[in-house]
Image (cartoon, rainbow, N blue to C red; front, side, top):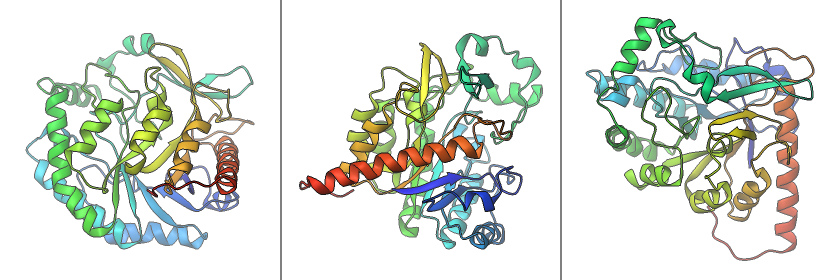
Length: 355
């Protein structure tokens, strides 16, 4: 595995100098979050970000994310211009050595939580989702911009955003995604970049919006839409693990050849559509991270992995879910798991196809 941590950019409370001190860190996952969706990232902007990382001895191999605009998702009037801008951003990041681009096709919101500092029994806090709380949200008040979100919405903006999907169901959204893939995957192939779609988070409809990447069947449809190693998957154990009917070990086994990036996160399910995030450690939540890693190691999947949302512990403040302390602990735990699995494989080798 290529061990990484996410960094949100110059406004991130976690300094790059501190990331550099995390043992075994191979690279940083970052993006130009201040550039609006539908606008191309300039080569100068991208080169400046890469240079800043390099000053701290850190490499940039994964972008998360080049945002896909609502015009692309809905097939709006600006769709073609926004696809062209997305391709320009793709070319710019490939120029500095990025080989993996994570993106998502979630309508209106990248991801959703209803509590960003839920107290846990050990004195830490974590992000949580509760369906009943979601249903009580007053959409007429809009949604605020949070540091970990790409954007917020005023009441007028949110109403307009939701109205764009009035006639778009899951089948039509998949058509729009398939059209996007036909435009961008050949470019990614030529550049040597893998595009890794992130599952819906949470993995079900919110606010009546269609969502299409939330179980094995949905992932198959996306990967089948353009048969290429460059049309790949971000395997997020937290997003997929929020559904009890998702067998993550079976999914990792099936999709191993198309996994280009791994988000390792643990969640505790507290209801059919209720969950909160936990420590990565076995038993802390309902996700079998050890089982998933065992599949990936045995299949020879050698891709970037980052510990996803962690708890906020030891009084650390900052972007919810993205404090350094718990993510660093999670990374060490995952590294230990992987080392043990690699040692076991070396002691008991067997023929296998490398992915």
